[in-house]
Amino acid sequence: MLSVTNLTAGYRRDHDVLTRISITLTPGRIVGVQGPSGCGKSTLIRVLALLHPPRSGDLRLDGETVRRFRYAAPAAQRRRVGVVFQHPRAAADPRHTLRRIVSAHLPAGAPGTETDRLAELVGLTPDLLDRRPHEVSDGQLQRACLARTLGADPRYLLCDEMTAMLDASSAAALVHLIKAQVEHHGRGALMVSHDSALLDACCDETVQWHDLGGPPAAPTGR
Amino acid sequence: MGEAMGESVTGGRLKEWRPGGRRRPGGAARRGAAVSARARVVASAAVLVPLVAVVAVLPLVAGDAATGTVDYDAVRLAPGTGHLMGTDDSGRDVLVRAALGARVSLVIAVACAVAATVLGTVVGAVSGAAGGVIDATVMRLVDGLNAVPHLLLGILIVALYRGSLVAVIASIALTHWTTVARIVRAEVLSLRSRPYIDAAISGGASRLMVLTRHLLPAVAPQAALAAVLLLPHAVWHETALSFLGLGLPPHLPSLGTMVADSRDDVLLGAWWTIAAPAGLLVAVTLAVAGLAGWWRDRLVPRRRSELAL
Figure 1: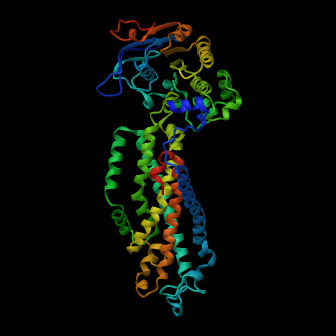
Figure 2: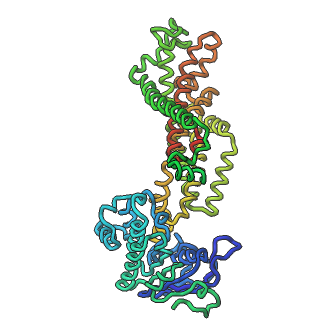
Figure 3: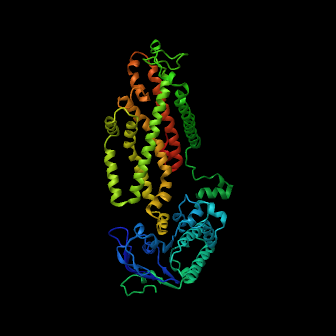
């Protein structure tokens, strides 16, 4: 279980982006969070992915309390939570080929066939793997980013407006893929979006952003 | 816009309307002229750099006998058939000696540029990637080092280890790595908060992995450019040190020692003793700076106007 209680986080010293947020992810379920732009959804994802240290709050990952973030967190712990970012262009190193991007999170010494398997899973044809990010479309690049995230075999998948940059068919394909991953591999997923139709279509439950805050007794998304 | 659309409806002239219509007539031609002038600079630099390299290798081909031969029967000979650029106060061929000097100066310049770039890249990348107190401390140290005049600090280092090639290289490299460190740090700072770095951290990457896989490859072009821009600067620095008598030992001719030696000869009317080393010095620096400027324009195109050489 990946849960956070009473989370407060922010970037500037005098301003909190998140105040007393609580949410819980369980393996095998997709939780959707709907909120307007700029409400702090991405910050919540960053904290849950151990990429941003919160000011206060209790973050628990499979029973362990997380106290260290970014590089300080143990690599195995970081790998348990995978993130798919909103902008695939920004989330892929422009100097790397798609093959390198897809294989980036595979365990050291993994055979090359693993990369091909991941690429096939997300629907990338082999000829795309030798291209660089500027030579493929947003949809193809987002597929590569999702494949990279799955390479670490994370128990939790955090999707930050994953389909915002994509056309309808790519978005549908990726959402189906996430659903399949959750169903067949027992991963827990958090889908964050402002698109309520998308969340209703794929999530086991959807929570509104303003329902996440408030006192600890407030709905936690379970 | 309304007028243009009106014309397009009535006379089908939409194709002739251009958003840049306010530009002065002849602007394109003038820009073309500027481009070709720039192309000429780059082309001449591209010819000059290999030429200087050949000249620098010339003494190797000619052999030491031709370079070091002292001939008191041929002191201060004017340029002519025997000696293309004349001879100096010891009867040595000025052109061959200047070529040898250019070689020594270039070797020093390349060594300085490489050493300063490696040191600057490592310090800048580590400082930028580490952030926090480490970054603040390192950058204040860099500021402090920058506050001391480079030549003064260089003179101090050379004075400690007088007359050695390594001391000259160290004195220039140790005073110039700070520029590279600043460039690399700024680049690393702008990169380290990118989502793809976050993605790498999320995948379990260590600081070293992020540095070697993402940050260093990204700053490499900037660092390499800084190295090339350092070359002409290092040549002048070495010349200045040698001119002050603090550079190389007298038997090693560098462009700086030759300019220093020729001061008395020039007063005696032997202008050619300074012409060859000074000409090579100017040619080397202009050619390398011309190529470096062209490369920088390609790397940072939006700053083209500021950087025109």
